[in-house]
Length: 474
Image (cartoon, rainbow, N blue to C red; front, side):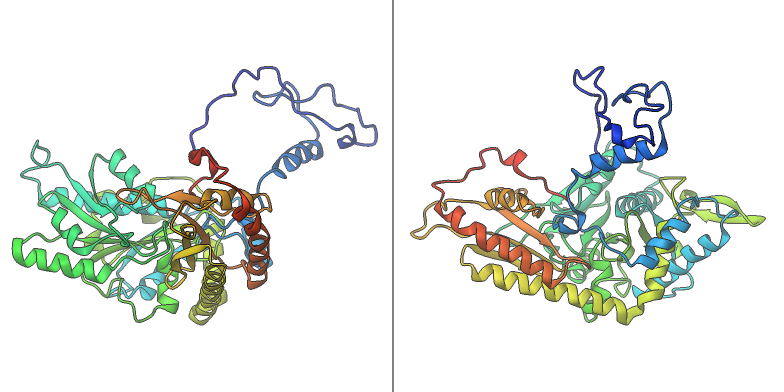
């Protein structure tokens, strides 16, 4: 979550109140407008409070037009009803809400089967608030297993644990390394390779490496990292050095896409070196935020000392979490989606979303102003940059101009530069999700077609401050 600070010299400011927000007598009971940044002295009517909050939120963007986020922005009405019915259930209270706990267990079992755990009945897993918490849990398990293997050396000056990953990883992995005192070793981008290179990852590994992170669906361009090739490179490393380095798959998005429409791709527990996998139920799992999942191939991959036990129907239930109290509604919604769609339903939804992405990529390329980096062939995500001007000069507009102008029409399309060693590359990214239909895609392309003549006619880029032009949203 972002870190917020107090207001800047706005003491005494109050929320404007429309007298029509009152009851039959518009001014009855409304002694004064409520303050913005401190608790008011007296309560106000519930309908007045609702209207004040509702009206302010109208200034937010339209979530359905947010093409920056991977997070689900539409669910069926029946799922929304279930969410409302379960909003008061605390997921941690297993003894109070045993059926919610049972639905969580079923979801873990379904994912273990979907991801080819050697024995789905013994695979262990849990729900989380999202992939960030799931990644923290997976990283903690990797570090604790490494500590067990190195009890004679850790802690010592020569035994600082490290974690190998591509520089394209989601920021939660940088947080993990910071919070849990692990050295991040990042493989930079090179040329047209925008994610982890297997050989480069293996070269960074040593006796202090707790694991290698592979990403099934990079947030930068939507591409899958080559999990099987990374595992093969680590197999070779083990043959040469004896180092046995486990792999975690960050499948925040791809772990709910690949099993349905890339079934021939081997990336999951079929690879013996893959010890754990996470995904976001609230991304391509098709559930409103926030719910995530973390699974380990067997109990051996999750050290017992990390597991806490809570009273459950007179017995004990093991739990593994960074958070404690959290809503059970999203877990119920995840089970609803699994029950409602099944394998074939998920396949149809994810294939339709990929089809929309592919069509968008083809039509955007046809404008002649853009070069495609990805075309929705893996995640239903397309990343593209502007083509040089004719003759090789600087084009009159860049991706930041396009993002700014599309925002004027309600579309949130992020523009951002890539990390080392490709800081020279700035791209636009469009994330296609369930609910972003081909009809909405047509509307986006219509707006882009109307804007391009104006952008081509401007003398130079109108965006001088790239940092404030648009944000990069994971």
